[in-house]
Each structure stands twice: as structure tokens, then as C-alpha cells.
Amino acid sequence: MDRDEAREIKSQLADYVHELVQREVHASGVATDTVPALGLGLAPVGEGRYAVAVRYRLGSPRVRAIARRVAEQIGPVGADVRRTGRIRPLAQPVAASGGSTDGVASPDGLAPLRTGPRPPVITALAAGETARVRPLRPGVSIAHVDVSAGTLGAFVRVDGVLHALSNYHVLAGSPSAEVGDVVVQPGPADGGRAPRDRVGTLAATVPLAPGRTATVDAALALLDEQDVDLDYPVGRVTRTAVALGGEDVVKIGRTTAVTTGRVTAIELDDIVVGYGEDLGDLRFDDQIEVESTGPGPFSRGGDSGSLVCTRDGIALGLLFAGSETGGDNGTGLTYLNPIDTVLAALGAELAQ
Figure 1 (cartoon, rainbow, N blue to C red):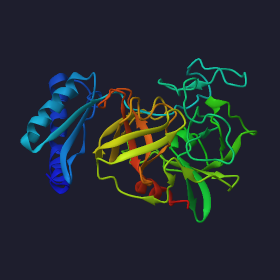
Figure 2 (cartoon, rainbow, N blue to C red):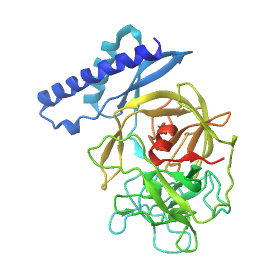
Figure 3 (cartoon, helix red, strand yellow):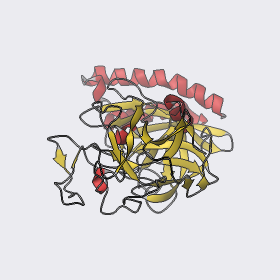
Figure 4 (cartoon, rainbow, N blue to C red):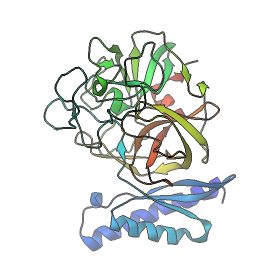
């Protein structure tokens, strides 16, 4: 079926899924929020053709049964049903006090960094750029001074002024963050400290809040120095596009460096991402799904904030979350915010 037909069926199924969840709640007596959401989107199956993407979390018998019912309802027109692991943002906040440590001593001999829920940012095995890098370039470690580490995804301009683009949970980290907070490169998990590694300050965020469906996890840092390296592994990235599904993509991230993947679903709604104590489980609509086309994962903890592009240098999305299982090679699925939605929310444009 074409995209409009798939969208119509997806829209109709949303009400059906809600009805099935309510039946489960009444039959089992469990609270509504203990029945994991079922993600619905569009999955490419050929040139201009789509199935309805159905995504559910591995390890939840109740939602698996709902997914099976939904696939039966779709029938011969086509369902692309996939199990995912638990989806998490791919960087974790450093707790101001309390919390649990991941046991990774800071590189400068200070106390071990405290992180939020596992999986922690991968430090010892990072293949990407975790050192201090000047001039700044895409793909390097960066973070709010109280966040472990994420990735500098892109350089953008707001009213002509250069900023660094990454995720809210990388450049802000929690609702307590404020505009003007220090941003360091590398991130604290990689030894970054203020003031010696300061590269800018938190300039803008798209707030995340419990109980509110989100579309982007994004923030900007105003850079102290405007001299940066604008090149990516695919060359200069100056254009954006809406993902149609099936695109071969590439990203450069702080943890897994340069990896390749393929867009396996678009317009995914009700993708639930676990943000830990501060924000809990948040739902995202209109997301993009990518699976690895290489031998390893497309992304891991610390790759949050990476810009995902086509092989010919067109930006499609901002990487923000992923699972450790799922996908054709079993190394997990990665989720992106559509880049045009991100830029519009922040009033920014890609730097050229």
C-alpha cells in the first residue's frame, strides 16, 4: 500500500490499540501505565510501498498479545512487527548527590562519576573521539558540566550566531538545568571539567516533562569560540530532508564513531523512552527508527546527539535513544527525532 493508505490504517489502529489496552486493564486489574505502549508507524517494504510498523517491548507478555491482535487486524495489507529492547536515552545524567556509580573513575583521578540508570556511557571501549578537540567538530564528546557524556551532533546558527546542537539530556540533563550553565568538551565522563574545558553555555532547550508527549529531545549550546570544523564523514552537511524509509544512513558518535544503518520505520508514535528518576518514562511521536547494517550496533550510550545523514550528506535526524536488542543483527534499534522538527523547535538552521 502507498504511504497515505498506510497512514490511514495506522490512524484507525490507534483507537483499536487504546481499546485493547483498556480491555487488558479491566481484565487484569492492573494500572493503565503498567501496560507498555505499542508503537505504530510506517515501515518501507519497497519503492513507495509501506506496511504498518508495530513495535512492542521484549519481555512483556501483555503487550505481545496486543501486538498479535493488531497484526491480525491489519491482515493481508501488511504489518511489520518487531520486538524492541527497553529503549533509553543514550547518555545518562550525573547525579548531584546520591544515585549509583558506574564504577568508572574519572580520568583526572577525582571521585568516580555518578550516573543515572544503566546502561552507563561506555568509556573504556569508546571508538569515537573522547579527548579534548579544538577546533570543535561533529562527533566529539560534549555535555553539560553535570552530565556524563554525549555527542556534538551539528553546528547550527540562530540569528546568525553559531551554536552546537545535541540532545536535551546531553546539554541540559535535567529540569534543574538553566540557560547559562557551563558546557564542556569533552564531557565529564571523559575527563572534561570546568573551567578548563568549557566550550560554551546552555542557550536553549525544548523542555521534556512527565505526562507530556514529546517530539524532540534537543538543546543548543552557545559557543565561546566561533572557529569550528564543519566537516562530517560524508563531507559538509548543509541540507535536510524528511525520511521516507529505506534510506542508507551514517552517523559519527562519541562512542561507536562512524557507523552505518538503514531507516526501517518512520512516523512512529508512542515510542516509550525511560529517562530515569527525574522524568520517568516519556512518550515520543513521529520518530524515525534505524537498524545497523554493519557487524556491530548503530549506536550505544554516549552517541546521543549524533546527526544522522544519508550517504550523500543530507541530514535526516538527531539521534537520541536506542535499545540494546532488536534489529536484524540483534545489536539494537536506534531512534531519531526528525531533523526539520528539531531545527524548527529551536529556531535554528544548519551552519554552512
